[in-house]
Amino acid sequence: MEHKIEPLIEADTLLARVKELGDEISTYYAGSEHVILVGLLRGSVIFLADLARAIEQPVTLDFMTVSSYGSGMSTTKDVKVLKDLDEDIEGADVLLVEDIVDSGHTLSKVLAMLALRNPRSLKVCTLLDKPSGREVDVNIKWAGFEVPDTFVVGYGIDYSQRYRNLPYLGKVIPL
Ligand SMILES: O=P(O)(O)OC[C@H]1O[C@H](OP(=O)(O)OP(=O)(O)O)[C@H](O)[C@@H]1O
Ligand SMILES: Nc1nc2[nH]cnc2c(=O)[nH]1
Image (cartoon, rainbow, N blue to C red; front, side, top):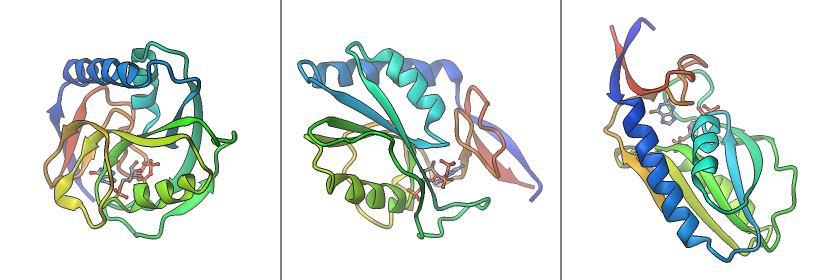
């Protein structure tokens, strides 16, 4: 599809908010023995890399790959687990780090899976929340920004695998 990208959130604004989230998360988990940041590949990688460095205490990192969007702009609702975590999460404080919560199908499926493994706690931090897209309820503890009903890209988030390395957040405008 022919399209262009219009800026939505500047790089500096993203980073300042990530720093704030890091401070809040550090306070929340002060005293925890084991915090695991679980990133959903591939979209959360850039956010997670910045967020992890904004958190004061030691954390470990693990990753899962689930995919529901393929190369298009709408959810298939069929969330497939393509790569599972490498580590056991039993007894750990797990923070699921997402780039965007839209329909909620991805998170809802992943949260249900991880809850069965008996973590000490299981919370969600998403950079972006798009409430207008929600089809299933999900409990989000930290959200960086609310975004309007538009397809966003950049800062890790793709359209057909493109634009992940944009340092800012943009929106896709069909031409
Ligand atoms: O709330 P939902 O409607 O389920 O959408 C959110 C999910 O969609 C995107 O993943 P995608 O399947 O595009 O994979 P990616 O992380 O590799 O970009 C995004 O990274 C979220 O994980
Ligand atoms: N690139 C991109 N992926 C998504 N997955 C769910 N919502 C979105 C979105 O707005 N943009």
